[in-house]
Every structure is written in structure tokens, then in C-alpha cells.
Image (cartoon, rainbow, N blue to C red; front, top):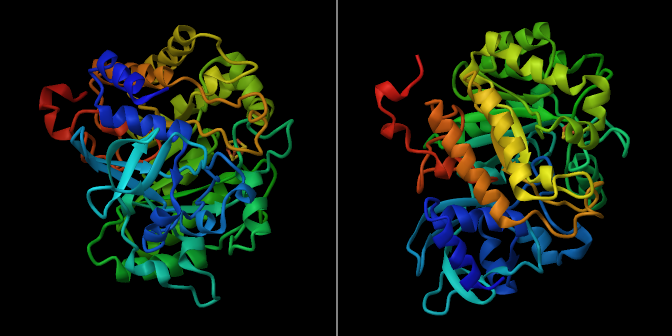
Length: 441
Ligand code: SF4
């Protein structure tokens, strides 16, 4: 596809900002960097591999400079289309039609699409706390990296998943493969973080993040189907919020990204101090859930999973239950929908189901990572138009139900959103535009 075809999509989807279209395509296809641009990037905040690889090639196919200097995120800005600041997570793909190089007219970085200029690129500043280490020598970037332009401290407490192998792992997920890859590269990459390590890292951030850029923390990791350090999943993940809230009461908004758990375990999470609960449902269609999430299907089952999400609203409040789905896997080969209309209709049904009950899902753009089961059968990601229709349908159902902006993501709206792995926050109206009457009772 040339730039002219991208511009045709801009016209066809004129109700979506062009920034959101380019952001989505960048997440879908990944981005390449010129060596000179990477030298500039080496001064910025590096990619931390905070849970998955979020790359489209294995580390072995990246140069030493790409491995070391890829930034965590970029911000699109200005240029011939006058972009408002739009933050995008970096997914490395040396063969992407999107390339970041040095601008011809200025010394700033520039994003081009098949050699045609799109916009300027800003880099995330290197945080003051990023060169710190814990007393045990572990770098803070291993224990407590930050994403979303510094808004979110991302604490993957358990970097593996007990759903193991092709029969159990979600077919789109590279958590276990990423862990293996990071260890093979010799990077400091802690498999199970202790509450003490996390508290020490947060103490450093609290002292050095003088401008209070960080507003929330996520505690997450792989599923625990048996026990980990003698604890079940809710006991394991609740120990972190309990420790954090005891030492730093209310300093950050605590979010738990874990499985859809039985009600007593959800209550334990809430009582430990989490404010937001993310029991991700990944994909709405029943058959696809079974095929793409075989472990979750076998241990919990799709209907029970959905029921637990709905039940969790009684504990957390519906607006604080935010289940994620991986946008695009409903079109993955070989099981997914063959055409766009069917895929959108299925996801819209799921959105309607949750949003009509005040529960607002969110989505990420599927990154087809090497080392996952779906990689072989999906050399190409789903079409860009699928994602653009998804943004439209998401925004429209959200507005139909007059939902509040999901908490824990910072501000919504073009030029303000910081959520970097999909454009859902970029296309929602700014909170200030919602009137009192727009809010649900
Ligand atoms: S439950 Fe699935 S998506 Fe979550 S970490 Fe395990 S394999 Fe990955």
C-alpha cells in the first residue's frame, strides 16, 4: 500500500483522526529505525519488554543497536498533516513500511511511510529514576518500568504463565517465549518479583518523580493455575497491592490484570487495595475463545469467565471492571472470521453486552509476535480497515451507553491520550466534553 491508499482511508474514515489511523497501522505493522535515528534514540527511554516482546521479529533478527536503543514509545507530532501529539508503543519490525529517520529539513526525527513524510517524532524523556538500581543490584527498569509516557508503572510480578505449551497457552501470547528470549540475551529479567523489591523500586520512583508523572500502577503477570510460592492467584497478586497501599496509601491508582476469578478471590483483590480490575476476555466469539485460549477454556470455561466479569462489577463497581480484548485475533487464521463484517459484528455484540451493563472493555492492537502459535498461520496481520471499523464501533457503543471515560488511563482525546497500544483513548471524547447529563446515574 502506498501513501495515496493510506490517504484514501483517511477520506473514507473521515470521522477518525488521521493520527489514530497511522497509530493503529504502526501498531499493526511495527516500525523500522535508521541507524542514525537509533543513535538519537539511545539517549531516550529504552524499550523495557515490560511483559511481552511486542516485536514482530525475534531478538536474533535485530541488530545490536536495535536491541539496545529502541525506545519504549514515540510521539507523533506536526508534519504535513499537522498531527496533534499521539503516543505509540514501539513494535520493532525492520521490514516495516514505516521508518523513523532523520528529517531532511530539520535535525528532528521523522516518520515516513514508504519514504513519504508523515510527521515528526518525539522521544520519551529518560526518567530521572531510570538509572537507579536496587540494593541487590537489579536495575529499576527490570523491577518497575514505566510506560504511557510515564503515567503507568508496569509491575509484571510473575513473568511466566502456568498455562504452558500449545495445549494451554493463549495462541497469541508470547509471555513465556519473551521470558526465554530475554534470559538468553543475558538481560536482567526477574521471573518472580518480591513485594520488597517492588516497594524499594517504588520508593525510588516516589522520591525522584518530583513532577508526579506516574499516576497508576499495574500489577500483573501470568496465570496461576496451581500455586506459586504456596499461594493461589488472588493471594499471590493481592500481596503486592497490600504492601504498596500500606507504604504509599493512595499515591497511585492500583490496577490488577489477572484472570476472571471467583467472587471471594475478587473481593480479596479489592480488599488489598486495587481500584481497577482487568479480567481480560481476549476474544468474544465462543468458538474462538475455546480455540485461541485453550487453557482458560479448560480451567474456567468461556461462559463462567464472562459471568465472573459481570459478577466482579458488584465488588469493584462496573466502571472499575475493564476487561481487555486483543483486537484482531477474531480475524486470525486458521480459525478466525473470514470477512470483516462478521468479525466486527461479533466484537460489537461483546461490546454491547458489557457496555450495556456499565462495564467498559478496552482493547489492544494484536501484535503478531514470533514464537506464538498463531505466528505461522498469520504472516500478515488483519487488515487496517478492520481496526478502523473497530475504533468506530467501539466509540459509537461507548457513546450510546454514555459511559464515563475508563479510569486509570489518564486523559482521553486526541493530543491528550497516553495509552500507547491502541487508539481507543485517542478517539474517545475528552472527559470535559461529557456533560453532567451524559454521565450514567
Ligand atoms: S493467560 Fe494467556 S494471555 Fe495471559 S499470560 Fe497466560 S498465556 Fe498469556
